[in-house]
Image (cartoon, rainbow, N blue to C red):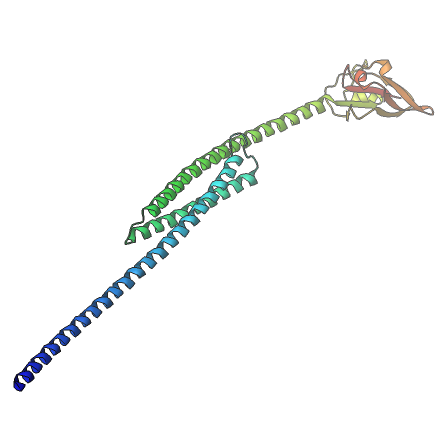
Length: 287
């Protein structure tokens, strides 16, 4: 009986030992599974954090590009107003500034298009597609394409105006030269109309120089031996002689002799229009 009890205790001890070993192994397995799950959770959390960072960066980029596009739109409105059909810019400096501002807008559009392309590429490389972000980027792309078209149309308007202005300036230059030539012609004609000549000399000298014939008639057509004057400026003709015989035709009431003592100092022209009406030559014999 005693021996039976000892054997039973030994068997029970062995069974307990075997059960304890099995439970220990099971616990170790469970610990490993828990650790593995924790690693997976941490990895997933890191991925979520990384995606959140990427999404935040993308949203910031989208906002930055949108602000840039809004600024481009505002500047475009200003340039459109300045270069409209109703307000043609004729000043060279202002027109040059318009072109410079337009070039700057083109550079900004190009820079923002590159940012959009980069953002599109980054989203395409993302392991998880974010539909809202893709739609926002597509909207930005559409806006930037429209701005490109608007700027191209604005540039065409400015280039058209520039061509028109250049043509107008050439026409103005031509017309200005024509006016200048006409003014010179008129001035020359007026100068010719206002030209007159006088010759006061002894009868013998007048005949010798073939200004008058034997009868005292004026025969010369030459300006030689004559003094040229402008009838609008000259109001008297110097003679300095004791006696003067006027041979050319002039109304008597259009002039008078100015004496200085016994000498006739000059012939004063009282009415220039009447005095020169019958001819632009004054010929007189001094004695």
